Length: 591
Image (tube, rainbow, N blue to C red; front, side):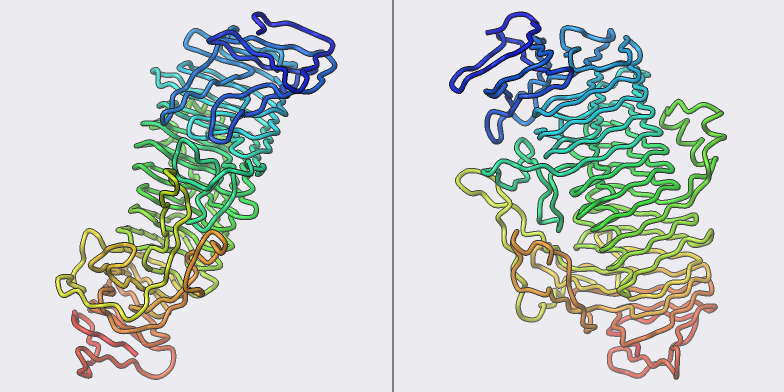
């Protein structure tokens, strides 16, 4: 038992030996200013111990007061190089031996270098104080444990005291390890990160780790989302917490770049920043009523631009007016000079798979000069009530390279199951067989609050809109309509139709998780998947293939045409001319 911080030239801990701190304290070992030797004692646990070995150089064993954080029935004993509390730097909770160079003061940390090769060691932890972190260089190599509390993160900002804005400026963060997050904002904090570089790379999880969505033990992306990876670059949690990333570059090898989780009414903002995934992952995740703003940002992602499970996402331009409004509304503290120097940019999204995927309700707005290019469907809705608004009046563009702009489908997430008393991701998705059965209680000609709604204004679109909802199944829906409105002189060239969908395989497990979301469509008559189309304001639909609808409205100044030849329509089997200024309902076939 070591009772006081002590410096050595060599320390050897033999197999079977151990060093420990008194109750209420933690031990941290550094060699030449680098934290090392610590390891989480058991899979799913929170405690760390210094592993046997010989440590030579300037060896400091620091005894620090525990910074205990409760979460989901566990207590996480944080250790951090710098701890800032309501009264400023708390030396008793800080491991100053892990701080190289620079200066640490009550209101600002500047030009410090922090390195770790152990596990679950934090760089800088700020709780309930206005604080500035300038030009830190933080490199943490080794696993963290939980990004829901930031256990093992480079920087954590928490606490919601009035005016307690935490500013990170000029940071260079490069982490390697499972759940070795770059930055975590929690507890109502107002975090502003600018002119920074954040990069996180996957680590190696314990051999006995089981994939789970049990938040106390979760250390990797749930494969049921169609992604893998074991570190998110950032996370935003808690009630009313804010995180803003300005003029920054953020990379995560897998899982996700910017995330919200375990909270409500959070605000996540990216201004003129570049967000990049490596092998797999999403640009952002929205949950719990989160508001996410992406202005003038570049998203280069593999799997999704965003996953929406209860958030409101906006992609637009970083105009001075828009950024100034956010500066005021979010209390970002940007100076007039910073605002003037900010370049005005469009948001650009490039995805090697899908754009936005919903596995919960949510909204997406695209405007300004935003450009979205996806290999697969731009909008992938897995049976959720969603609302999409796209305004092309200032040049917004959508390019779906596989020809599908909007895809409605049943949820193919099999969910977790209980195994030996543990919640593990071992569910199996099984493709439904047989034809869907009509639910007579569901009106396929009316718009419902639970429907999938999309409105397009003053934009030229080339691609198909498919509604493949069966009814029942994994979503337990009576049905869901796809409600499409094209106005303001919009043009849409493609098929707008109910479909029957099929996965490439009949069952999906963790072994073939990449099949999640990958389906084929066959245009078929409406069953429980109504397609309601409204053309107004001089809009035009150019039909490229047989389309099955349940309701079609064509305003007096709008039209339905075909690239070559003429368009024919039947309503309930009766040939019917398409007359502008008319609404049609029933079993509609446009071909």
